[in-house]
Image (cartoon, rainbow, N blue to C red; front, side, top):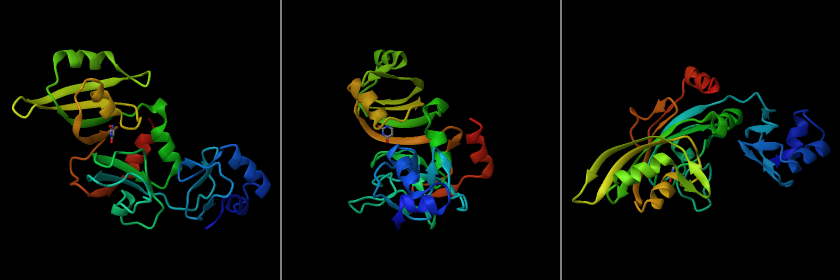
Length: 236
Ligand code: URA
């Protein structure tokens, strides 16, 4: 591990002094996350970008689609030592998840060591649709559906619901099963939407992300994205 400004200067991008300025200005990111603290250390295998451009290009990019099981954390490292999505993928590359799913949410999550790709996918203007299947406590009513279609306000911002399908209502167990498609990626957003309707989410799974789905992957299984799939995301 070396100081970030040292690595940046060794790559010939800028002097150490200049690199320090870039870090303070929030222009430097490591593995897709902006770093502003000067003491930060990194490894040459980490993907270091300045203004969104990767400076250590000689690394091989990897892209994975994982069917995340329950009780797995969506980050590269967990302070409490819990299993992370990265632990489930056999690679030496410094991959990290693109966005996050809650600890108990299952389903489709992408991982990569390509910061540009991650930023591209997470950019709000790209409006990538994500579909979730949610099991709700309570029976969803037509009024609830009307409210959802009008758009639910969460923290003063409307959640744009692209599609909603009621798949099942179990009157005996007092539960409903719905499929909901949204584009945004705010944390816990699906749970917050249904909480507003007094329909707590009991189980949540993401079944698709853009044109990708998890149809052929069992829980904990993963596959690499094809070059075609990576290019297709870039063309969005
Ligand atoms: N919305 C949630 O509430 N949780 C997730 O894990 C993903 C979307």
